[in-house]
Image (tube, each protein chain N blue to C red):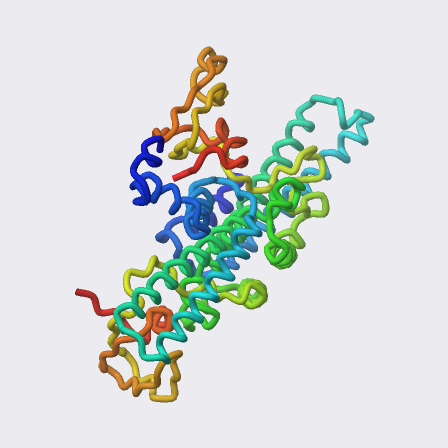
Length: 198
Length: 226
């Protein structure tokens, strides 16, 4: 059936939870693209046939006209599915930059296609440019602050080479610190610290 | 408010609130709330952001000064908290706008009215983002499709309108409150026979209404979204 593969592609994207990414399915993607080319070939051959029969392609309403129309509509539908797939993925890719930062873990990066990787890096650059122009880092401070300081536990050996805005400390694994929220947030989002509440 | 003159120098609660509601931080909070609730991008308040940025710098200086002069740690932390909250508001305001711009960049670029609601920095950012996403879509999809189907904005060459551009849904419902008595609001939803009736809004009362109907009033600042 026409359009089934494209539908599968979109469904696959939607099958995982909101904000999550599936492996870029280049196999299925290329199959849909091939289907598009096939539709286009058949569309053209039907139009040629009508021209050979001396019919006016614009006004003739015979079986071949409707055949061609179906190929055209199937192609458009496939295009919309392909675009939706890439565009929605791009939206998630952008959100990853906000949630995780410009350095992504390998498990996530593996799910990208080559152009998606490129797109992520470019987007990261654009956002940096905007933020440096505003002289404001927008990626921190994602939740309204209750207290300027929070208690955190270090989850990984991140060493003592880190200088925070108001002090330096030895951030050995499992040590607990009382830090400025804005300083700690970048480490929390990278999974290197966790906030202790209560 | 009428009673205020009688009570002498002590400001009444109303007066105090009225005073509070005109500070820049409060104005920013309002702009932030409206921006958050509106489905489309609203006008960038250039002057307000400028003033808040200046105030933030002043607050930072105060905090620095107090922390070096060994002031009371409690008052210092209150100053710091105030600073952090304002900073959060500003960041969040800019963030929400950036996210809207990203989502509807092609749509915003097409209309001069929407485009001019962006700040200079946002315009630069949006232009670059459009180029990047266009390139990404072309590389991934469009270059592989037959010639007549390669447009980002149109489904195919025979489409008369741009039918591939995501647009914000202006018919969503929003929670809003008016500052003054408003009348003659044309409802854009509901049964056809009801649409000719004009709708009135009392000040300070909450309404749940279709965004499209009050769009001009939000843009002119008469109605705040919540």
